[in-house]
Image 1: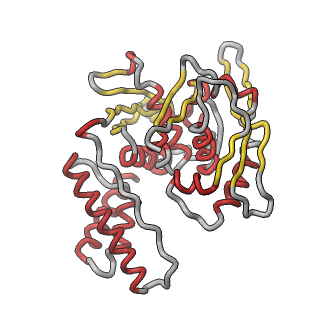
Image 2: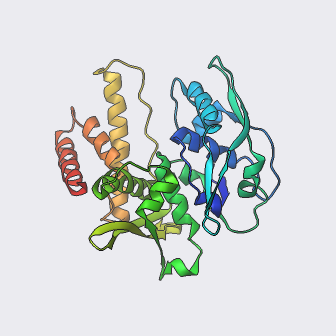
Length: 318
């Protein structure tokens, strides 16, 4: 998985579309299975075992979820806006798909539409390439889109600021392209539920260390300035460990306690590595919640520390 990449034309990276996280993951995994320099490869089969391995998940009903995802992608167009002629061009992702209707198949398949070929195939210029190993760890559609937008300007001189890269994104533009129009009209909500979680996830799971600040137009917050550096080599950020999956055991049993202790040990060790790398870096808030949960019974000191951190961080976001 370390060498796999997702390559898309910049126009597609900036396009307006709405996909669920499973739909994003299907499109992304499919994109690793063809050479973007070559013509449309036709039908692509996504095996359930490969999907689980790629994303580190093991849901009981994963096949039915992916079956519904390929069906749904067929109904969700990509919108490309041409400002010169004030026209919207809607394109379908797929021209066809296949799945087992009974819900116990081993794969789903998809065939990309000929209309989208210029944005996925035979790409020679104006494209964005991201590493699948980082994209696979992003757990919301917006964090995936934001990561792409940041990586798109990585090599543009106009966006370079010393050793960092900066980009300003308009709030309404981000909402339009991610199709979250009508939601989070208040800046505080957009910040709390969209921007902060996405940046935290990117910081904790990818090769980018991102800082951001709001852009004011008059008294209103109109956009966000993102500044990031790419973490590579010996000083790269520690990689978050993959936690052990919860066993099918009785709540409160010794087996559940062993699972909690094992994951608590992994998270605390990861936290130490993060602090050694940069004392200002914090765990993703979801991981702090996990520490609070896992330490409740057998490590009251850690439990109280985690609760205190959660209270402080949630207060700052509001």
